[in-house]
Image (cartoon, rainbow, N blue to C red):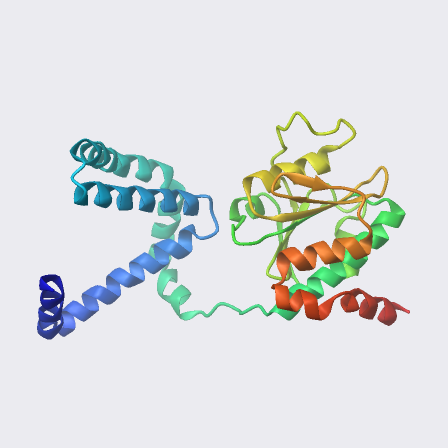
Length: 283
């Protein structure tokens, strides 16, 4: 009650200057969060937040030793964070110097609907079916909650609406982007020719090539869904959470993608009709 009374007193005595002060701090926090959103630093921020919460709990429960250790970790951790986040801090200062931070706040982000994701699933399934027949190697990454900004940077930025023809052209053997992975974000092809980390799992079959090991490796370090078309056999595989499902039929691939990328109610309503519609248009 005392805390609430103090808060009410602060609200009553707040001035325009205090409101501006709060807005500036909120703006800076927003820009920092947006800057770190598509990088691995986002996970580090979550770890720092957990440490701060544990520190407060230790103080409330009067765990003096733990509180002392946590305080020391936070004190020296500030220096470590400056070193770790040096690229992000530099980029933020460059944007501030160019005056892009204000314009970036005003610009609105395009909203993606579930229909775009469904269309992408249908087009990807159709492309994989065709590439399976022609034995064209392919590696497709469907990004989910964990953003892959660092992976996107090492490839070629595309940002295009998905279509079976475009996907097949990207993985055409004579295309300069066919050896890398294609990144899909919220129903759009974001980048192609991206390099993925290989899995260090020694239990994987020796029959698996670089594409399959890269798919498993990427699924081990992120929550992404990866689709692989084998260049040797034309077999379609899906990697999720470090597990690889091989020899999938196109219909099974579409079901897996719907189950992983679409809400449950959308999956039950749509079923197989997306792929059938695409096939009927082709005919």
